[in-house]
Length: 242
Image 1: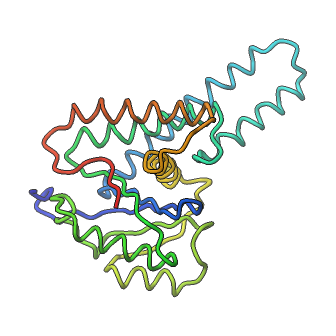
Image 2: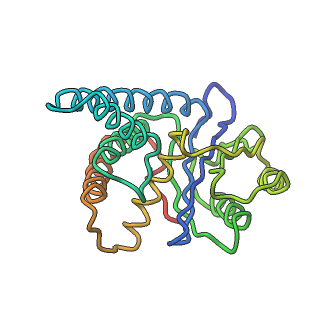
């Protein structure tokens, strides 16, 4: 694969984990994609916020206090979009997030992909194992990566505290930085969480009773099939199970 503008490709890695299934999910994208996808998610949230607030305003018989309480509850529900706590409102936003992921993947040529990998012993071992597996994959996009300017982002609520942990991850895998992010205010970590939940479900084939989750699974399958047919000269898939 030819590098862009004659320069090596640099990546951002966004990691979340699923403790019940003992899996980690890593969203990987070329650095220039992160701002564009973040902006797309901002518009998704804006549209959802406007739609649901208009819906609240049309409800008859609500007092000013009741309307204010509903809007506050809406804001709380929209703050963090997680697989484990999907309701109808969150599922609506989650489906739009997943669609944006597949749209960016199908457009090319900038790489974006998601990896579902095992959790092994502890966080550090699991992350190192992920990079080892990454090196084994025969992917043109990843063969061109330049680790020295790539950055690994962790969910601050899931990973061990301490500067040494981050330094070990950075040095072991030749990264530029290893940062902690608050997943409640970072959409790319939330996208990693959603994709991890979906791929774990697809992997384990367990029964789901949650209608919002079932709706998201259905949409995920539809989008994966739809955009696979639109893929243009890419030598990587959107989803990998390691």
